[in-house]
Image (cartoon, rainbow, N blue to C red; front, side):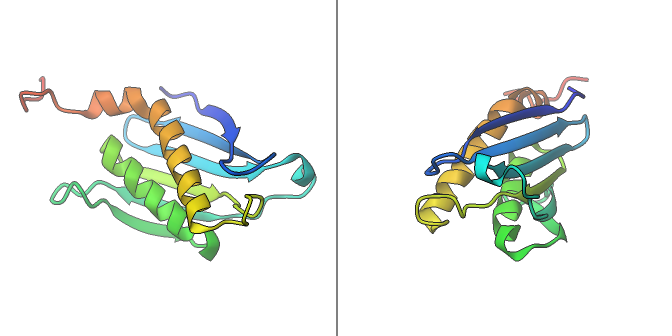
Length: 146
């Protein structure tokens, strides 16, 4: 899969805001860009968010390593967590750029609203990454084909 996947879905707990996703799956890495937008914000530019690089740790696969490349405090934790989840699930280095704003959610971005948004982003992204995940998983007997 070399062509980017572009899609959008409603931001959970928001009336008219959508999450826009741009996903590129390369043989050696995953590149994901996320942002939000609504009809009322259509004419205003979206501020730059955080950009994080994560890679699987071969010595401790359950804890991928992550390095922020560009930090914007309101989006840094969300971006880092997402990059680590994707690196762990795909076993590939992952770049995530995120400028999602939760300001338009019902309560303005509470922990519960952020968790709902995070779960939805992970769910949608992993659904798109399923072919990449299955191609990197070792066979059930633990022997990789030659």
